[in-house]
Image 1 (cartoon, chains in turn blue, cyan):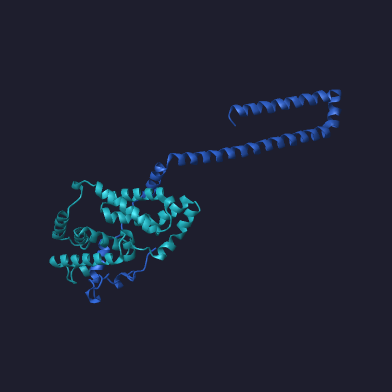
Image 2 (cartoon, chains in turn brown, green):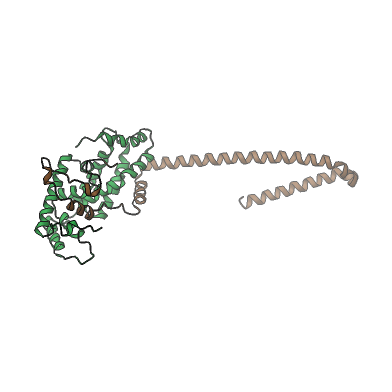
Length: 149
Length: 201
């Protein structure tokens, strides 16, 4: 940002600015220039100035603009929620289908052994076990809803 | 108003482009990084009081934020920013009650008092008397001189900040320094063997 005006070199080499028409030999003493540079250091921006400024800008933002920003943020959140819900439904459906196939395969494999052990009451035992598992899953999901999971 | 140098316009071209693209927040962020300090220093030079300068700098930057969409790029961005800042400072000066500001004779009296105090060994021998003399200068010369040193001796930047030609800045600098030299001579502080040649930090 600093512009060159022919006087931005090292401190001691700097020439004093001349008034229009002033001869070079009339330039003020470099000692005064150095003394002034030491006596007038550039003030630093106060600590926290940026934060206070941004807070002031936030307060100053017109109501319509603030509403528009809030509505935009709300739309974004709703879209995120919708995407999460779709993902959850897909996972649930996938789990159910997978679970059903796995159960079917397990029963098919275990059927000869079950028939050997349980005899004619195998269908009843399988139906009872299925009902018990379904009841447990239902209770677990109900408990999950109650505690807000 | 001075014509803004082409180099300054090209330096702020990125901000103008962001504004054209509708990226107002990013443009303002860049503007802040580039001009926050300069705006504060301009307020300090115009208002003297750091607390008032901070308020004025904040108000100026809030106004700049509000008006950012209306910046059309015809003038250099720096010229536009400094004009808004100067207007805020002038309003602040007008709002000041007469009792809060010191008249020039009062400042001159304070300068005399500061010069009369003999600094103890190890104290800042240069700063206080010289600052008091600078404070006693006529207002325009004081502003130019102060900003000249705040902005690392850039006459071009001081001219932009104060919205006046570079020749005017040079004239005020010359007058201010001539007046200071005369004051120092009158108080016997101008001899090279005295504090002017000392190298205190």
